[in-house]
Length: 471
Ligand SMILES: Nc1ncnc2c1ncn2[C@@H]1O[C@H](COP(=O)(O)OP(=O)(O)OP(=O)(O)O)[C@@H](O)[C@H]1O
Image (cartoon, rainbow, N blue to C red):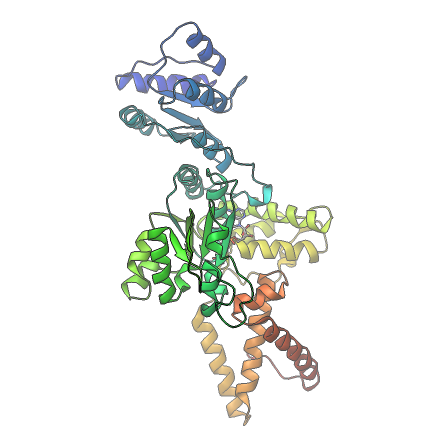
């Protein structure tokens, strides 16, 4: 074992010796190398720290794996970010132990690793992620997730990422791709819920010229675009039944026809699917094909909601404020302590995305460099999760009032208000990008523009007659 920390060497070596192993401990990678060069027999198992003076543990790992490909290596580190864990697994590590670790766990691991001694696959070196793409998470649940990503990235298995909206499912899919041997091939994402059902098949599998009216040119679908790489299917629970059947067949056979095509297309695609829905329940109700679920769900990664990892809030917030400052070309703002406490206490129904949107908004609008609770205003409604029932009740109360007041034409007005709320939410969600907002609402871009136009007129009119809002 190699570690520059004397205490770790002592504790681990003692425990391993007590378990019956012969242990030699070194304080640096160079010392190990010197011993091997001097003719010491290569070990059956190596435990190595990552950050040490001189060569680090990953360099040692790489060198030893070249000479002894079957040597199991356990990498130990206090740095459990994805690039460290993935770097370790990519280098051929058998296991990753986060420090501080449980000593019994380490001993059990040694037993397992010695029993297995499997050859590790050859893999390509992935590019370093940009800061914006890196998942932040110091909480145990996230650290565990990062280890799983590091390990899974190497295997060509289908992965199902579950978690509430805005928890970072797409970021996980990107990390799986980035750290995989496919990293230099495309990562293609498709949000199943954002595309009208009748266009989805076309989007996924493409079409030939003349396949249907309006199909003048051949269109290459997302499956083909992702060939050799990763296809991320978001909101898979919203996929229509007929397409579920087709997807299942394609996944089973690895080949398909474009719409209106005769040529069989072969693809090598790793599918990562994501959902915020309970697919097991949907499958039990017959609304999602159980056999498709089995195929997508070879491994499941769950992203906990932000309210279950509040300790990550400050770091995430700091990242988002930094990103916004870079974009706006200003000095980054920061949250004062009282504001940060409120953020930590809040329930985050929109999860990380809600926090991100809030940070961008405050970067643009908060008056000072230090953000105060007053700046937060009523952006955080006391940490209360809004239930769908609230909405129904408020609408009903409004309708009752208006009926009692003798109004007619409620329906038109309610629809206008519904449109307005949905549009505002969608535009806020997409940072003002109209095409994407329309897609997320399931509207055509033209419909959206028309509604935005109608809204402008209505707002002006409303200013004059001063009618009140239902909620
Ligand atoms: N752990 C994290 N570290 C840094 N940024 C994050 C993290 N999780 C999420 N984000 C950011 O939050 C936003 C939402 O994440 P993402 O789109 O991956 O969520 P999602 O679960 O796929 O959402 P949806 O279900 O609505 O599609 C993104 O801008 C992403 O970069």
